Length: 145
Image (cartoon, rainbow, N blue to C red; front, side, top):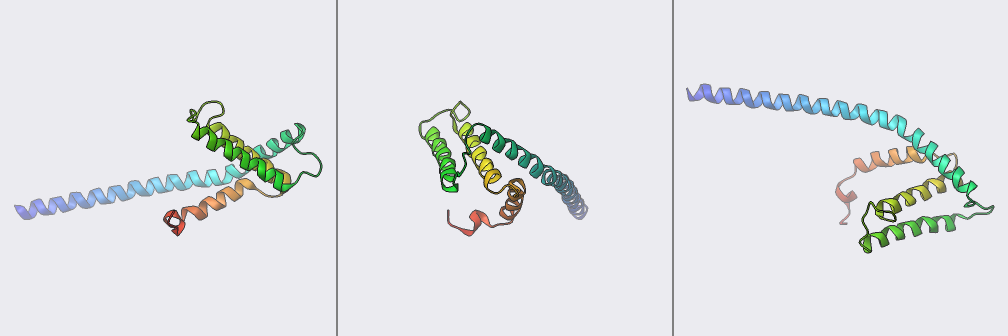
């Protein structure tokens, strides 16, 4: 009787493992389909938004002739500093001038920078490529912090 119960338990355990593997494979397949769609669509849409942001910045006077990269990088840095200040001051992250709005300003400045100084580059594709590299890296990229 114990042997039958043990065999039944093993069968149930194996069935559960097989089911979880099948379920995991389905999730992996769904994830891969989602990733393929994301990887296909994201760079095009992101780069189109970057081009619009740059065009707007030019129209609003942020791109005088002779604009230099150092000044533009400093403007990106200033937005990061504003994000830190929002955090340090305890602002609601979702409020006006909160961390999320300041993070958006950082991304907008970076998109404008690349569109203005490296117009043939695809920042969207660079983000996808770098994400794929980071996914495969070890914990903390092998560093202590």
